[in-house]
Amino acid sequence: MSLKQVLNSVWNKSYRNGTCKFQEIVGRDDIKLILNKALLSVRPIHILLVGEPGCAKTLFLTEIMRRVKTSLFVVGSNTTKAGLVNQLFERRPKFVLIDELEKMNKTDQMSLLHLMETGIISEIKINKTRQIELASWVFATANSYEKIIQPLLSRFTILEMPEYNLEEFTEIALIRLAKVNVDKCITRVIAERVWNELGSRDIRDVIKVARLTDTIQDVPFVIKMLSRQNKRIGANG
Ligand SMILES: Nc1ncnc2c1ncn2[C@@H]1O[C@H](COP(=O)(O)OP(=O)(O)O)[C@@H](O)[C@H]1O
Ligand SMILES: [Mg+2]
Image (cartoon, rainbow, N blue to C red; front, side, top):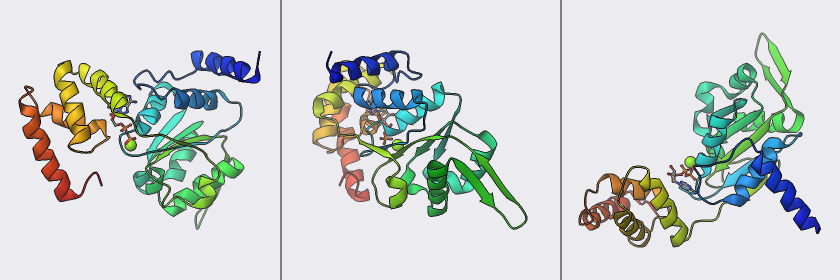
């Protein structure tokens, strides 16, 4: 058996027994395998998912949050309000899930770096100092590398998520909209027009159009309306 075959069988086994099957997510099998490998690892592994909006980054984190009890989900832009360090002290999570890491303030990024480097979380206040050891795995997402401090970036295994092609985009739209009973023909038309006319690669736009659509005849009108609106707010480029 070649090394590649051995690795594949180990990965398949860990994937089958994995704590998270990511059943809601269509495709992205390589990311599913690596995240399961990291979830089962005896030592911390830190993973950063990077990709354009709508490529399932948040979906990966929320599925882990639902399945893995020892996880803490935080949104990068919100950590100051909730107090990241405080939450880590209180919850002591094994898996720290951070959505939109690039929006996290620099102080919290430094605390996270310290945790990833030393396995220690500490807080120094005027009257008291507290410190605990915390072996945490950090899984984060980002739309871009900008605003993430370099030493933090270098602690992560970075997985870039490629954009979908039209075929994958349509397949995801069909599965997603079947759940809310949208007719397959309408879904195909919406997916194709969102892709070509809105130039969007975000399934959220397909969902938006579908919600405003009763019949196939409504689609061009709704697309035109969103297209005008996108131009005004400078979306999609
Ligand atoms: N591979 C996929 N499988 C299933 N749904 C997907 C997939 N990719 C995107 N979606 C849909 O697109 C929406 C946006 O995904 P999300 O994870 O929020 O994207 P991101 O965080 O990368 O911007 C999700 O709610 C989901 O409906
Ligand atoms: Mg997201």
